[in-house]
Length: 470
Image (tube, rainbow, N blue to C red; front, side, top):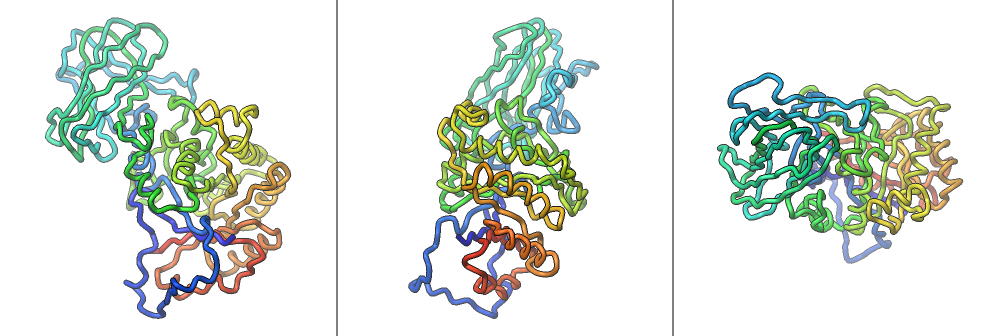
């Protein structure tokens, strides 16, 4: 199976490889659609999702509140405290680090004879909140009301600061335990740059965490789900597979910032937010508010693939951080946790509900297996250090799951010493699929349209990621 892959920007849903005819008139390609030469398998093309350009948080994931759990490096980034009469210590960020490593911070509010308009907080959303007239919005919050009684007046406002819909949430319980409560309301206007206000009323102390707002029209009406319009566009493309959770974010700037799929499962408060490497990757395009909440996690990715009829192609870190940045690697004698993550992922996707990770999947609402067939080991990695790790991963995975087809990297170039070394070594290892990922100008792809005509049809297959270099 020769897999060819079209890389997409998840937010814009457009190919990164622009139309070739605009840049190169010769040579030309004639496609004789009435004379098929061979069968086109469904998995011969697919889509590649990465949380870049607000692809997940602020994009496919329908959450409207930015920094909902106050875990950004600047805890109040995205938020603004509104006080008619300033009093020090009325609103504070607190930390329960020793009790909850995944979600240590929360907001503490003290209300003293407070009326609506005296004290509140505002969230700006992801470059604003897109609000639709007549649509229901579901607000939820985790709270701990330690004393008194404090009402929360929830409202959406437009760019002029005018109320365009809202409601009131009255916490039902007092005490030292965290509770979750939700309330819904309908917007009465359309606004592309909306914001969320929460005004406090009453006397007492209340702690807030995981402040969330979702539109009702998520994909398949799933609470806390994905944007239906974007998923529908993906589904309409009828991709044979979907590669996730990305490329560079899998590696991380260093290994501490790598993508760890197990931390993306379970309740939202248990999913540990980390910085997105596109937060600081380009000095001329800083995005200091770019983090990953993992509300869109591996369970949701598998569910998405199933929904749109595509094969899932998850990519895992192989013990190597980005070689263009820190180039940090896990020593071979410390690679076992990375390999175990791969084995556990296959069990999570395919295991019976009696298995450890199959039970986790079932507990999240999907007792049937996802029937995973492909797994990527590393992302655009290269060099002998990569091959050493690929061999360890391959041996362990094939011993337990021989049916899983592994995707390995041939680096970042289509030719040259680096490519030749990896390509030859991987083919000698009888690698299932080799991921060719290279960045070139559009005319290069036209000039190399016949690149694969001479490839061995009985050897390793090719997953080709097409990326146009600007």
